[in-house]
Image (cartoon, rainbow, N blue to C red; front, top):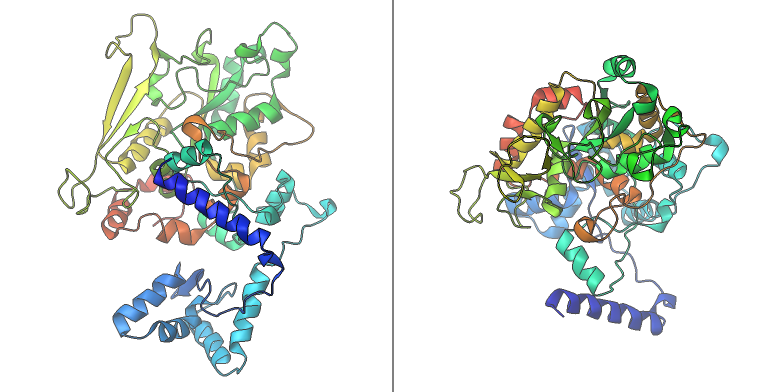
Length: 474
């Protein structure tokens, strides 16, 4: 058993021993104002992490930790919104003048971890982006906590050692925070071509399914479509076997869902590709915020190959720890696209593989999706985030575009749509995804932690793609 497994087993043994000794029944330790001094801070309309602020004050002002934490209260109070910097100062002054200011902070902390109050079903709004309502519609109780996404190797080790992963308590993002990242409505590109698709393809032969880069939620889309959208004209014929998509929803694009757009009509996917007329298939192309997508690629790189390590990833620009590259040099990515070639199409090598070079991880995202936006045939492009915050509205529009019919009751995917084994080990479920992708601080401060990477992304991110899909700029 390797070192990681031993550490996890020791932690579990210690936790079990504490439970056996009845520690849970003992009096709770008094709360300290230093505990969990973190969260979202605001200074001049910019958000950042509280702990980063404290470290900055200690380093640049030569103050002690206690002094730095006290000074940072005007920016770092949890669960308190401020309209401007003056409001921050006023809140801090009020606390300092109050002899019970520590108790005030303690009360705020206790309120933050109080159980979420669920709404009765009669008060649900099926199109609300409010995170609590989204979870309730999906049948997910936020009070149960979640297991966060982790690197594939770590998840596999835990599974092999039969270690039960601990759940974290959910801290839901606010509605305003979510809307600051993704706007107030779903973004779907290509709805203007729906009628052309329906006119060109007879109802019986209409097929839909996902396409998209790795980690763009193609599996989630496939499951949501299968559970909620039906092609009745195709289903009523009763002549299609399960592998032939009798309901009109395929597991992936018949040319391979991760392959570039120019693979269409030239290649055939090993799974679900045979026997499908590719012109009859309406691809639903999944896209994801490039920052959170790069973070996902660091955990699960799939068929993308580039030199990286957990301490510096995403690593768009090499630093002194990136081996084989000069500091400041961009780090290229090679992606292996495997496929069955149609007819007389040339085979790249005996193993039927194609490696495509990209200048960086960011260039892979830019180029792959730019090529899809330029496609002239009918296709839809859908944001992953809209499957979280606008699932029913988004799936309904996709289904209607292809001439399908929605089932009477909308169903959600609660657990990881990828599963938790094989190459998908460590993937996040619905609650973990909502907490992670609704967190603006994590997006802006915890992904591109190297300043050179941040500046590179800010300069090279495709502005048109970001605007067309409503993603917040850097």
